[in-house]
Image (cartoon, rainbow, N blue to C red; front, top):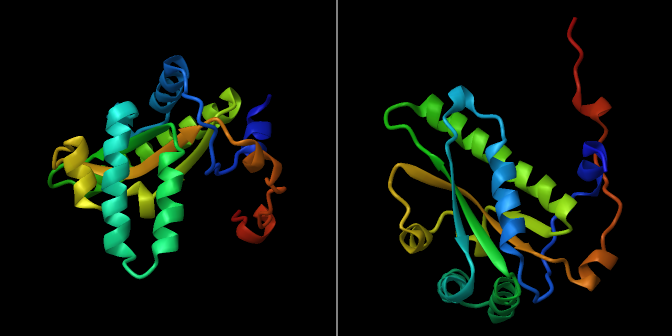
Length: 190
């Protein structure tokens, strides 16, 4: 499968089978992430793989977060927490922040985004479902997540990756990608 084929097929998959993911496949994704471009070879990414008992603890953390954020929407809380419960592996991805150097810190965030995208493409090739969460049950901006993974102050969470084998229903409902053509988004300068 070509890179263009993988890019065309890549989708955010949010519903998974209950099957666990082989450690070898998780390691392949992490390796793919480390191949991402990064300024001055700082390799600013950090990965926190959550599964097993730690995932059960994450579910409790996510439930507390959801109840606090949506106290009048119990159906939303229930459906959101069900997504977390049905996700076999969660990977929190953080970027190194450089004290006193905003430009380097921003470059590190961009590189970490590239690392996540590299993982996503590798997941597609490995037959894994993948979604990069930056809000909601990903807890990206919640201090409780920082404490949970013991994230040092010189690191910033860029995203939470939810990972699993896609449920059959999820695969069947995928639609053809609809994107605005690059023609409408491009200005040619010469």
